[in-house]
Length: 623
Ligand code: ADP
Ligand code: ZN
Image 1 (cartoon, rainbow, N blue to C red):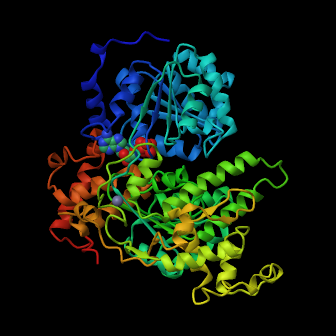
Image 2: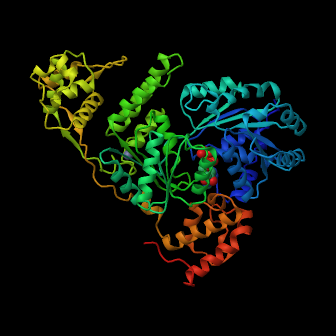
Image 3: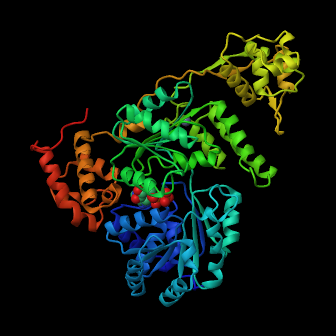
């Protein structure tokens, strides 16, 4: 490995000047400085930052400061292309090499790279260790490799990619280079695995805070999904939103329903033709559509940072997934809303999917058990009445001080308080006792609502005194309450293949009247704008903001790049707040580096001046 530089050689000023010059950022975010330093000092590193935490800057800055060429391994071609477009728009020289390019463009790119013209080269993992690339990298003396989405190397991660396994050969092929792994996956096991697989040597491990203070989390019981989703999206008219659905068909139906309500929506899932998928992504990036109803397949390829709303129409199968998917909201740091519509039915659906997933292949009971445990954590999160930010952070091993966060349904007081459900709980518990603790949720609920099913009759449960005891309640509600009781610890559920309900000491206390049971009310108060959201719009001329968005769309279309490559929402809001009247006044607006100032400044100013003077053609305030 290259000798590490002394502390004195740490060039903070150079770093800040670089960040200002290319990106127009005033400073660095937490851990970016340390990560950049590791890159400059050629010390192996593992950087764990949540989505939107600013990982890219950590590997973009060192080669620019040190005037060298680094290599970035990235799993998706679409992602590479967008990153290269985004960097070039900032005047930062970067190139990509991947299978989606024609031989001519590959040769051109290789020639430029060989001439040392680029600071970053993005490559797909399968290309990295080809003789052709090895030769190019050796000729250039590449001394630093960044591995983006590094969790893809681990089987324990939620996104294992076999082609990432080849990266284990990096160390042998480039014994003198430093390796820098980046991921948003926080679990300890995956982290350890990344270090081992890549053979990182005494790496600097930097783990950022997983809390996303600009996200407002809400969890509501699912009742009338369509109306509920429309209600949420109604708060985000004309803004970017993603609605995650459990199945491909759900995604298609959702997109159809939304379109029928005149929302600009489309669907996205892995069952579509690649061309069709790309088209949906492009239209979303170009701001031609606002809402994508998608399965989890919609993810890594989206770089749009102004997603203002992520809706989960169904419960994700783990908190990791939930964090990853909600993490796509508000990457620009502005407030965004994440709403999960939870139903216990999702849990059951996941269980059957997990058990069915191995059809054909040998069943791995261990994997199924792990999957169920992760799902169970997710269920707990969704059904508890604890601050969402606190619960998520605790899950990732970073406890937050428990105080009202002002950015979740619980702390905002939208979740109706706990209600005394002792009598209801006693009825359910006595039914569990009468059925001799040998049956699952469905069966117990059936008995309680007085169902006349084969199973109920076969076991003679229609003759029990508890049969029909809760016939006034919908079966769904009974199932929900049972789940809540498990969550509250007054009822147990075995973790066997056919889980049954069993009683514990707390259950008996409840039945004997020595303990009360309080459960969260299923109804929710109407969501209002949070203070966070309001302050992000303070002093912003919303009409001008919308009109600048239109200008951005226009420029993006002219240049054939995604709109976010042109300017970020945060920049547009600042512009619509400051309403600068000259190019000089643009200096210091966040997100405007030198290249963009020169390139877009005059046009932006012209637009603002025309808007402010009420010139014809300038759009008016939004409604
Ligand atoms: P990640 O790869 O960790 O998901 P990104 O690198 O895409 O996150 O960064 C998320 C957003 O934050 C981008 O819009 C980026 O421009 C912005 N950003 C990153 N670093 C800074 C910074 N130091 N100051 C201001 N904005 C930043
Ligand atoms: Zn909270």
